[in-house]
Amino acid sequence: MANQTLAVIETRDLKYTYPGATNPSIKDVSITINKSDFIILTGPSGCGKTTLCRCFNGLVPHFYNGTLEGEITVAGLNVAEHKIHELARHVGLVFQNPENQLFALSVEKDVAFGLENSAMPRDEMRKRVDWALQMTGISELSERPPHELSGGQQQRVAIASVLAMQPDIMILDEPTSFLDPVGAEKIFEVINELNKKLGITIILVEHRLDLAAKYANKVIVMNKGSVALSGTPREIFMSEEARLIGVGIPKATKLYQHLKKHGLSLKSVPVTTEETVKLLREALKHD
Amino acid sequence: MIEVKDLHFTYSTGLEALKGINLTVEDGEFLAVMGQNGAGKTTLVKHFNGLLKPTTGEVLVDGVNTRDVSVAKLARNVGFVFQNPDHQLFSETVEEEVAFALKNFGFEKDVIEKQTDWALTLLDISQYRNTSPFMLSGGERKRVALASILAWDPKVIIMDEPTIGQDHLQKENLQQFIMQLNSQKKTVVVVTHDVEFVAECNPRVVLMSQGKILAEGIAEEVLTDPKLVAQASIVPPQIAQIFLGLADLGLPTNVIDVHEAAKILLNRLRERQ
Image 1 (cartoon, rainbow over the protein chains, first blue to last red):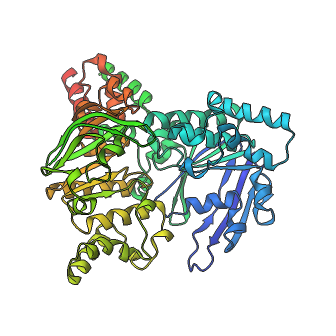
Image 2: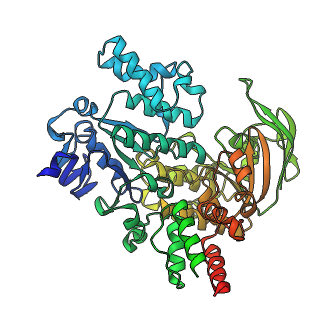
Image 3: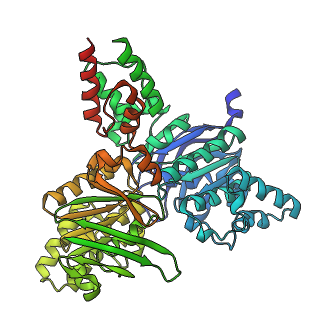
């Protein structure tokens, strides 16, 4: 099939049970993620988001053991048959708290660390590090010790470290939750650039959809271990089921719903502030 | 009542984290301390229960200078819930964790049991009673940390970034729960950069930047001033951003609540018809 060539992650009836657990943490997961998708993966705490992400980079089943059933292919590799380090070439992971990821004495050493392990020639490594620092907007910080940087800067270092490996897919687990709103916005913009300019597939695990929705083309909502909903941000925000599962609907969309209930229908469903302002301007002028 | 008078604090590294803070937190008040990473928010609230003592200036809790009493004594009245629950948790089971301080304060056995049950139920973690806190998710560990403080019923509850790692429903629960504490005349101080959370709770807001207080007032006023919030590296809540974008139409710009926003817009339409 033509669109199968675009798929970077495909799962069919994926089911996984941690060792010793009686119930599976994820089950019946059949999804396709295409190259250059910007996916938001969301759902209540304990819904299986983290476990599913662990399948994407092979930590499940190779590190956690347990029982994996069904099929999963990542970057053309069958996860069950390929080791973590093989998958790591294609899948980069950025954690919630950058402090857990950074350890070197300087920013550039942190960013170079993964490359040193891959025995890359020095020149090439230098180029890669500089490129990763530039893409994340932290070239001027290259000599600084990471622990002296702000939380937002540290998170950019963590992203640069992953980016230097030139992964096809980047998984980010609530990468901005420790950051102030301005710092968070900058991180989302960096991630968006990597997606739009370099075509890296983004899987963003996030509760705060209001901040991230404008960058994503697809939202996957998990609940109780399975995929409950999947669609564009607009579709998800307007879905009654999403509301019942407890997906945080942006205030812009809520405002739309309130106005509609009282007889004012805007021309379309807004997700962002800018869209709402535009639609309200039209509505207030016409009437 | 907590009174902060010309508080300066310098860490041993030489970092001057607080540069002259004057602030009063009234009994029964709900206060949000907001501002950028590194603004000094956590450093400030750590003075409220004596975890830190002023380099110069003073902090009085119910008239008592925090220099003159131990943290243990202050803790009876002022509970502090850390941003990172791992800095707080250490017991083998969730139940022991929640009961720990009650035992330390020397409560009777039946009171300990009753208070522990109450706190476990309140935070929706009673199913983990016999589980190790470290087996739980980050969000759940945060609730254990909160339960362990609430169990001994302090007058003042300080929460450092309570919404981090919480999903939408948990945030709604947390909000209701803070309202409930507040209605029981508890003083609640929340350190946060979650503007939407603050917009829904509508507490008094103290905005900090670089070790100083930039502004204080009700959320509706402080969070809708684009210049102020920019200085503090936060952004106005989405409803406020929308109304700021419509400012030239003569609509009010200090709106943060979605119901109020809808009402204003519908009224405007009716006037025009």
